[in-house]
Image (cartoon, rainbow, N blue to C red; front, side, top):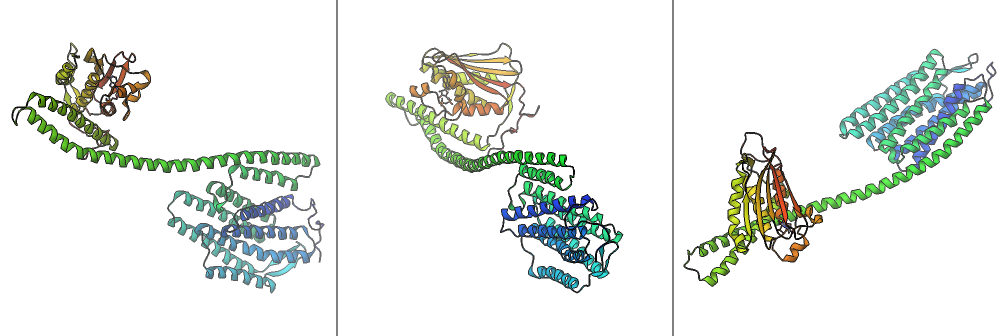
Length: 568
Ligand code: ADP
């Protein structure tokens, strides 16, 4: 039997057949198949990629059979194609359900459920073979009329497929915690549902209303599905395939331009399209190559920065261990040093009887050396506290001039012994009381005066207190060895001493300025060094804000916001 209208034989193009037919069937089928093959060959061992390939192959066959029945007039060909397509059409949603599950849970479905799925397909094949799905062939409309049994069976199974997809989606969504993975499975599920819905509903509506052109639009569901998949692959490395945006873009462009060939009838346009096609291929090739190189470089950098991060963590661990060690060692050293100092003082004061002058001299030296050692231990302890963020500040209103005067008195003998002058210069108008931790600032100034005397051979030291508007300025000026320009910045770093200093064989570990900077900065102040150059003396300047930003107005005794409580 032949239908009574002039349709082309097999795939010869004719204006009788809606052009959308070619546009919807051929490119979508080819693209889907290429896509499935691409994913499969990129990752052959992955079950999900095998299932995706199955889905795309089924889709390809369905398109082929569908096209065959559209463009033929021979009822035998149409009937055979139509009946075969019933099995393929039915299998598609079942394999999609299978793929969906494997994609979401990353494991195979239990054998029982796999067998059930398989049996539903076998059952339909038997029904088709027994002729239960075909009512008769309508020669006038040139189409096969399907039986209600088929529709009922199909509808029940398809409804179950939708239920299966929804249940596994919601179950999995609640199971996983990571937001990115949640988004990934949502996008995938959305793609599957859109594809299935378009495929099933357009097909159903088409047969109910006898409006078969609608079926063609259903096929575009595959394009949407592939779009979602492409996005997942680029963004989420789905199917364990590494593809970057540029590859996907070029692929989509080539497909889009290539598919125009099925649509364009005008020869000029065909040539133009051909040129565009070739240009896209060439430009695409270079784009992919350059992006590929970029990606590779980025990956190499990533590997490098990962290993650096590991090394950095290790260094941090070592640094903490070192600080811990210093802290423990210093604590252990402090106790005997204090005992030595105590006993030396008692001996020097004559508590154990009169000390002969020769021994007195030795004891004086011992006392000085012991003090230096105590200071060193104190500095080391301070460094480890600073690094552990365990310095406690006890801010209280303080007369800075009084503090400076006290220190100058303290160092008077020291200066005299070295034949140096030590003078204090106070402002005419007294400064307001500063909100500072007097012990900490005293320690800083003490170190500066000590340094100034230490690094000066002749001349002397001036301690100047000035009012500089919002800040109180304390200057410790000496006529000593001076500082080179390049050294000025670094002196405030840990364990840094200038070359000249090391040559002078003056004791010191290069910690005082580091500790001082940290203390002054915790007060919201600044400390820096000035010098005209080597041999021209130095000035160390501290600026402290008259209103300490680290202390709330009116509160006199509290811990700095910058430094957490010190653990004793
Ligand atoms: P220390 O004096 O124990 O070495 P500091 O941290 O107090 O440690 O000082 C660091 C370095 O700064 C000193 O070693 C010295 O090189 C330099 N320095 C400090 N004060 C002066 C000064 N008044 N004149 C010249 N150089 C100084």
